[in-house]
Image 1: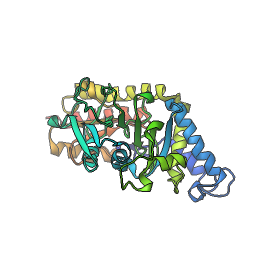
Image 2 (image 1 turned 60 degrees about the vertical axis):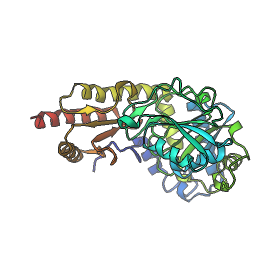
Image 3 (image 1 turned 45 degrees about the horizontal axis):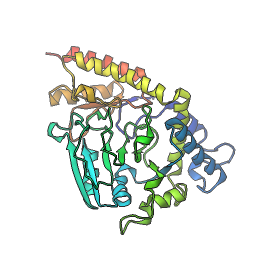
Image 4 (image 1 turned 135 degrees about the vertical axis):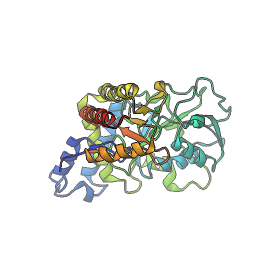
Length: 361
């Protein structure tokens, strides 16, 4: 069977080249006579895999030496607790709530201290990013938290909030490696890899060294302390070894494509094709304020739930998978991550034009 165009929000499309390479190495990784899946995480072969993955990521993102790169488990959702446990020294943190995941992170932080919701776009179903140039940042806040790209709602911070000198913590799960980033603007930048980088099961945390201390909230489990993982080079316990191996291959693939500048250019081109069509369509329309649109996740609707369902069904039959919007918002959503080829977006728009012509009353 031919490969479909997979518009899933995550686990999501991966570069075909990477999948083929992994398939070739499935039974015998570079003469070891075994699969990476079967390999000890303490072996020499695996040590090379994880170290190379880190080195390539550092190069791609230009990560300064005073930041640690940690390959962890538990997904982004576990970071919702790990961040306050490790960083809430004054038991105060400020949260900017621009979607479901930021809201969940905020709710989790409330368990550990005083979490302040200092801005939100919930009043308009998270369809925009609030102005964050002059927010009421708490004087004793340990950090300011954002979810930089909102997978469900299709919004993206184009300008980082003015944190007035406080540490910025950002969940970048759905825009990870989609464009160049200045790591020095963040104290912690983290994301689950299952959208743009690899298989589900790995979360990458890039954290400034001064934030990694023994001084954590009482009762913080050993496994949830950044210092434990940093001191053990992400090998305190058995890591998600195979997932990290695939991430490493994706880093090499991105480097081969020309790095993050090239990715940004490609992603802008892809998104433009879809947004331009949505802006001129008489049937479909985007749901996000123009200046806040994500390059990765594009939600759209027809305004008629039955028609939306018909579209999703016919699109699936035509080889376009996972276009149904998140269950909390309905409609449709096309996630067009790094590995989605440009022709996938072109063909989707072609299909949408045809559907519009056939169904416009």
